[in-house]
Each structure stands twice: as C-alpha cells, then as structure tokens.
Amino acid sequence: MIKGIGHLGLIVKDMEKSLHFYCSILGLQKAFEIHDDHDKPWIVYIKVSEGQFIELFYGGAHKPQEVENQIGFHHLCLEVHDIYEMANHLKQNGITLDIEPARGKAHNLQCWAKDPDGNRIEFMQLDPASPHMNC
Image (cartoon, rainbow, N blue to C red; front, side, top):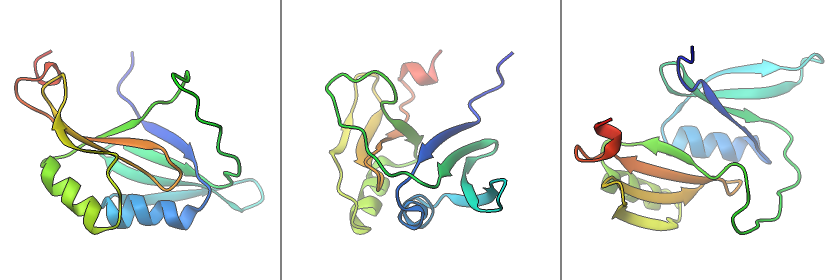
C-alpha cells in the first residue's frame, strides 16, 4: 500500500538561510511554494529527487532543548555519489562537519553535519557490501 517516502517537514527559523543551505550549498532545487489562507508564504518545497521533497515551513521560533536519547526525529540521511567530494564541498562552503567521512557499521561511508537550525544530516555513500544494497 505504501509507495515511498514523499517528504520530510521541517519548521525553520530563517527561510533564507535554510534555502541557501539546501539549494545553494547542497544543490537541491526549490520546487514550489504554498501560501496559507491569507496568501502569506507557508511552505517551500525542496526537491530531493523524483517524488521526494523536504518541506520547509516558515515561522520557527523556539528550538527544543536537546535531551540525551530523546524520542522523535533523529536525522535526515541524504545519499551521495562520493562522500569525500561532499565533505570537501561542505567545508569549502563554511559548513562544519560533526563527523568526518568514515565507514559505518553497515559498511557505508558517511559524514555528518547540521543544517542552519541544527537538524542533523547524514551524508551516505552506499557500499555494494552494505545491507542497504543487498536486501
């Protein structure tokens, strides 16, 4: 019955900073925008791939306090062709990596960073030996 994951929705504090990060730095494409019932900007859709989007909602004002082992959203994972190219690209654009490229327990190469609102993003290069590629 389920066809796939359609989108991930994030409420952002500063839409311009978020658009710069997701579009200018990561190279994703702003697809379209939806306005609310009063014709004010409400959501910007960023296209990740065919039929997959990141929704950026205007109006974030309060960041929840980080708690160890908090239940709920943990991270967004974006698949990349070359983890080292992505890591260098992020650094050249002023993005600090939380974790440098390394091989994870599932054999995939990964590095980690945060978006302007502190949401964790894993960048992952799939390995042919990983369970992701063999299930």
